[in-house]
Every structure is written in structure tokens, then in C-alpha cells.
Length: 206
Image (spheres, rainbow, N blue to C red):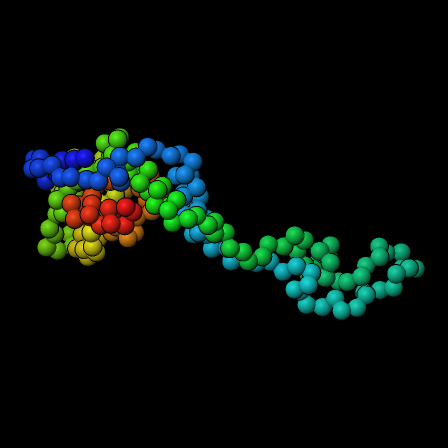
């Protein structure tokens, strides 16, 4: 498989990409599992309320069982009482949902293949930014007619100037190959990959 390498307004050459990565069928169920697993793993799960065994007091019966005219009570820390524990209190929990590595990588392949079929993947020579300037990144987007879409740049390695130049531009995200995830890919209208990153993607999910 080949994809055109774009540099500015001109198409320079075609580069080879792996059919095993970018030529798969779209598996909606598998992609859904990968997205759910990724989002669930990001939930904090540190919510905690005190139930009747966590609050202070309530060591003895507040008043005798009969003869007071009041409803019987065994502890002042009942959920019915002010200062009592919470009924059905929330507690710390781990929301993570397990997904096998092979399934996760197959889902990434499925997403990349679908993006390629929809012509939402572009190969772009990595712009060389000498300084972290937002206007330089805006210029790159305009030259490639990308300023009106949500863009994800995938780089082969961390480029500080590139990251700092893009961070103040709405709907533009920058990630390395190691930072790719299903949600990041799916929410972007265009995924721009530098040539060096294609090889790293193939090595990662082959």
C-alpha cells in the first residue's frame, strides 16, 4: 500500500505503508471494547462516603426499647438520624476493564484502516520549527489546508518546539507513537503522521 507524502502545497512522493496495519476490515465491536476499556481505565474511582460503621459514636442504644413513645432505635448512627451514616454509601473502586494486548492492537489496526479508507490519514514531512511559535504552526496548517479541521499530529519522537507551537491552537493535538490510543484517533477529523512514525507504528502493532 502507498500513501502520498505531502510537503506544503506539493506532493513529493509516495511512501509504502503496511497493508497488515492499514488494510484491515473495521471491527466495530472490538473497537467499542477498546474504547470502553480505555475510558474506564482513566476513571479515578476515589469517591468515598461513610456508612454507618465508619461514622463516630453509636456504641450503645440511645434509649430503651419501650415506653418512650418514640420509634425504636438501636444506634444514633442509623442513616435515618442526623449525623448518621449514608445508606448505600459509595466506596473506592477500580473501574478498569481488562482487554488483551492482541485485542487492543487489533482495535488500533481497525481504526487506522478505517481512517485510511476515509482518507483521513495524511503523511506529512515533519515541519522544522526553530522556535516555539504558534504563528509558525498556524502557517503549516494553512499551507496544508488543515486549519478548519480537528487535527492529530503523530510524531516519531518528542519535539518540544512542535508541541509548544501547537498547544494554544484549538482542535490541534500532538502525540508520539507511544501515546496513541483509540479515543485520540477517533475524535480527530484528520490524523497527520510523519514518515518516520509509520515504521514505529508497524513495529508496535504488527
